[in-house]
Amino acid sequence: MDILTNTVGVLMFVSLFISLVAVQSATIVRTPLVSKTEKQPHFFEIRGNKVTYIDTKVAQSHIKELVESLTVCSKPIPPDSNLSDYDFFYEQLQEYYRWLQEYQDCITYKAQEFRTFQVRTSHYNVRLELEPFSEVYEPIEADVGESSKELKQENSEYKSILKKLSPQTDYLAFIVRPDSFETFRQAREIAWKDKFSVGWEPMKTDAQIRFSSGGRAVGVQ
Image (cartoon, rainbow, N blue to C red):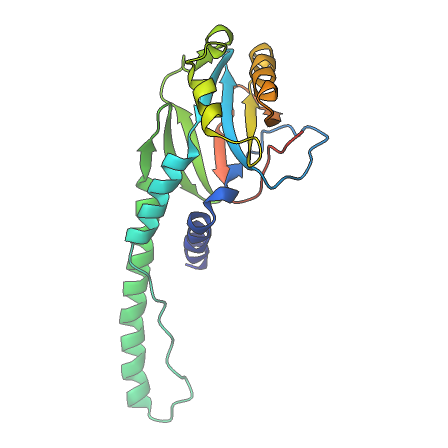
C-alpha cells in the first residue's frame, strides 16, 4: 500500500517538474568529463547509423493529463483505540474498514491506469513502469530515423528541430548504439556548428530507453 502511495507521489512530482526528466538505465555506461548545466536536454537516439528525435514533451503532456484526471485517494485515519465506549469504537472501526477498502480500490484503479497508459509519438511507443517509475520508449519501426546523408539536408528533421531550439537554453543529448558512432560524430558536428552544447552516452543494442525523475544521466561534455 505504501509503495503504491509513494509511486503516485513520484508521478505527481514528475508531472510538476517535467523539465527534470532524464534518461536512466542500468545498462548505460557512464562517460567521463560531464559538466553541470542549467540548460534543458533534448534527446536523440542513434541506432543503425540513423538519428531519431525522442520527443519527450508529447508523452509527458499526456502523463500530466492522466495524473490530473484521476481522483485524489484520501487515506482514512484509524479510530482512537483509547476510546472508553467500546460500542462507539467498534462502529468507528467498521467505518474505518469501509473507508480503507475504498482507499485501496482507489489506489488499485490508479495503478492500473498507469500500467495501461500508452501514447505514441512520431517515432516511439511510450508506456509506463511503476517500480521504479519510468517512461519506456520503444521504436515504432526498426528502421527509423535519418541517415548521415539526410542529416546534412537543410529540410532534414534534425536541422528543423535544431532551428526551434536555442544554444543558450538547450543542449543535445545523444544515446548512441554500438553500430552508430560514425553518424553520431556527424550529428555532433552539425550541433557544434550551430553553437549547441552536446552530451552523449553509449548504450547497448538491446537496452531500453527509460526516462525517470532520478537525475540527468546524459550531461554536457
